[in-house]
Image (cartoon, rainbow, N blue to C red; front, side, top):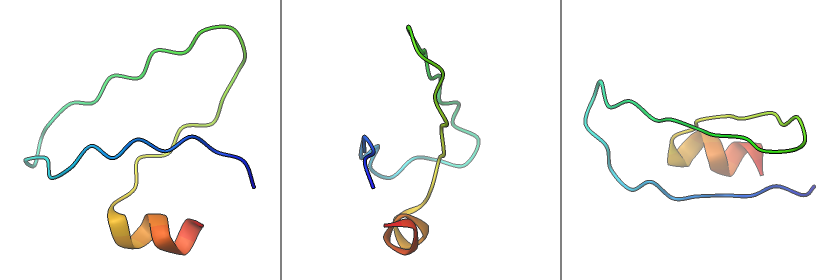
Length: 40
């Protein structure tokens, strides 16, 4: 499975993440570390 992964570190509750896409459509998921391990 091909994907791009960015580790955002520890973020405070309520932090806003902005994702800007260019060109092609994409699926974006925001996961904590345990859910990311399950996803892989």
